[in-house]
Length: 252
Ligand SMILES: Nc1nc2c(ncn2[C@@H]2O[C@H](COP(=O)(O)OP(=O)(O)OP(=O)(O)O)[C@@H](O)[C@H]2O)c(=O)[nH]1
Ligand SMILES: [Mg+2]
Ligand SMILES: [Zn+2]
Image (cartoon, rainbow, N blue to C red; front, side):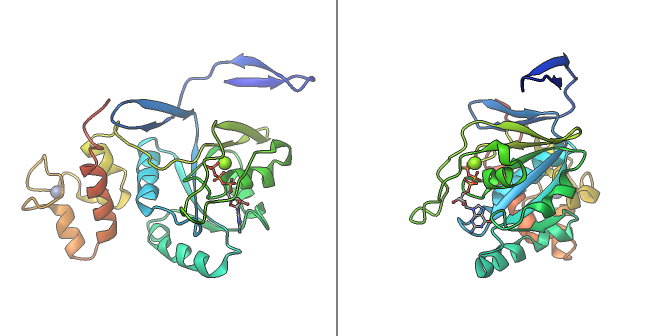
């Protein structure tokens, strides 16, 4: 949708643009559209509360399927010791070629700005990671509600309930979205899921059986590559988890 801002702070819809990407969250029961025409997925993680590496893998696979750019933000860098640990967990993704930006939304969000230029980005991640804090830092007029995390439960409080888009300039936008515990990918089939793991791609189609699920099948090219240290066992485990969660081949 192309919107021309009017003087009163409202906007006039000038054109409905075709959808170039659609981002869903889904479970076995239904799919829910999160946002359309996004060009970049900004996955926000932090050391506190602890983040799920499995969810990071969900998000990356979804982004790859939609051909979106991926940026990982490791927020709360001011919490030095826990943050160091979170950042080192993300080394694997840096090695795969995904940029990882360590920052503190509380102290300085500016390092994020150059990455957002020219993109429609969506901030995505679990509750309490600091997505709305980032938006407030970059768009002070946004006045997004934020809330303390629950230390007892090691979770956020699901403060944001609706996605909202903010313009940074004429051709850059940023969407704040509600924190999610699970990022279902039921709409991906087996091949699409494997394709979402970029380092698996050279091995897809190379297995002995063409319906190989890259588990314990004999002659699996992916398992072989893992044994040879060409791909990370951690990534294969996350792939298997997603597959077993019923992710693939069961559209709602
Ligand atoms: N120490 C520290 N705390 C931060 C930072 N960024 C955010 N927080 C705190 O983390 C808590 C959660 O921040 P929010 O911005 O509400 O998190 P959110 O990701 O939007 O959470 P949901 O809307 O529930 O998905 C708040 O208490 C923030 O003040 C940071 O860089 N450092
Ligand atoms: Mg929020
Ligand atoms: Zn295989």
